[in-house]
Amino acid sequence: MTDKHWSRTERLHQTVTNPNIIIKGTHSYYSDCWDNGFERSVVRYLHGDAVSQQWQPLGQLDKLIIGNFVCIGAETAILMGGNSTHRIDWISLYPFMESIAASYQHRGDTVLNDGCWLGMRAMIMPGVTIGEGAVVAAGAVVTKDVPPYAVVGGNPAKFIKYRFAESDIQRLLALNLYALPEDELLTLQPLLSGEDITALEQAVRRRR
Image (cartoon, rainbow, N blue to C red):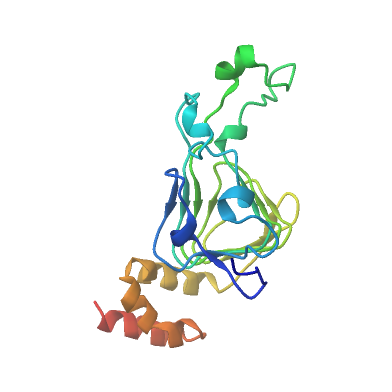
């Protein structure tokens, strides 16, 4: 077995086995150097692993949906619906087994859209959507949806800034870059690794 090193990453499409984790494409990764990998260490309370597959689900199962070119920093935690049995509207927060079915609250799917980046030790709460190209700062606790190309940080995470002007964000979203076949998108790498949105628009139009 190859020793882990911070320079190596785990490609999610090669390692994920839980049927409730949906991976798009082949370029999303997790920086797994300091723990036991994405499914064992990052994804928490998600039905569908070897143990929970033996259980009867309490209700509708949440899914973790991960786009392409998603970067997930070391020791990130993604909390899923299996942790949704602590009712703050009840007198006791304790998940008594006698009331476990009644206590469960469906939170909805958690979505990490294409090209987003989760910094080291970020925590994503159940049912949150991280927008295309968004950045979650290291150590942030995300309790609400994050817009495309936004930067958020803190506990709870708050909006810091947008990566680009609003008009430029709309131009990028209109390109629908990540709907391109992966091999075509990779031919745009020199433009993706730059700031010239106009040149990128022209290149995408030539391919459609």
